[in-house]
Length: 134
Image: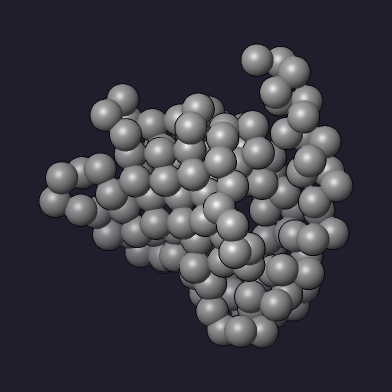
């Protein structure tokens, strides 16, 4: 998804959040239960922007129907090299309806889990603020 990739690469996480469908489903690499809804998923994207360092997409794969993409990335979290994939699916309106993130190796997943746990009070506050603006 070129618009999402461009927004993330520009560190425009508000712009990336604007591409989300209202009923978007986010599957985290470090949480069992998916997160649902634009306010919380947008807030998670903002939280990720605070923990990823030297983030870059290195490859993009697109489904034949144009509605699915795999964006392969590299980044650093707390000094740990992270390799990952953003799996994106678009709805009929061209908005992101599903976002699944996978990361490796295990040390990277653990570093990401720790870093995002520290962000979660701010993520929750941002999501609540976004819901009150709707």
